[in-house]
Image (cartoon, rainbow, N blue to C red; front, top):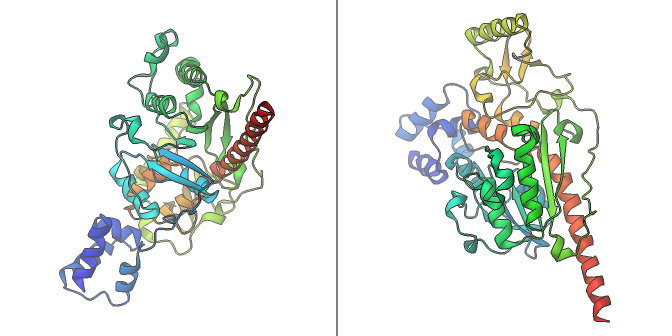
Length: 390
């Protein structure tokens, strides 16, 4: 029996801490699992729960006859992939360098995950229709505005540019923090747009907020969409129409779990530190400090990868005790991830992963618009070619 638990955990490539948190155990969870693995105690009802955990990757099955093919770069935990797979697309290549994100991605999607994209030649990537990428923002030199192609070398955007140049996808979707637009007085974003247009693509961008798409979190992000001008014979005035969002009122209570473990309640020391820091910042005329919400709050601030440190972006009120952090599942919901999405890592890793990820409902609406636009452009291309032949 203990061998089964050890094998299950090792097959998933996770630690005892990962398994304990993933199964929702309290602070004594690690000790319990360790005693079971050593054969000191019998798990009884927990054995089935452990052996059944993450046995069925929710997104491992893709349509047999795909409507389009795409690649997932800087894939994280697959938030951008989900909507495109829902629309009948097939992922033919995935790259993600972080080994912990790879675990989460693998458990949910299966398939091979390539590591550092800088080490992968374009020739090793299968042909595809759409490039997806939430690429990290890195500094570009101001002088680079006049240097042409070389000014993006040394940045991860260069890898996106390289693959688009070499593989000529029909379209792309890039996502980044909204601060990208103003980075280096707007020069960084200008370089990106210039280079994408220089490759022969239309480039349209818009900052969209998750709260406008049905999830109770502000989360403003810049989305960049492009289509191959040469392939589709597009004029310079072509514009991609971004979705507007449902604008339906949201409520934090809709994503909160019930009977949450006490391990998510912050300590007296941390709570006092939060309050002192907020008062200090207030006196100095700064607005920085913790943010407190309850079930009736409309939405939270944007959660980030640092949420695991102290939860200051979004603390949840509790009657008669200190506030608590969101649980990983609540963070998943705050990002619009489906309930069947598996979280196979420790709470700390999960916070980082969801903080770095995307609001799935926003991507879903963009994806619908992109696929619809692609279908229209393909049809127009066929009609034009038919007229030429006649």
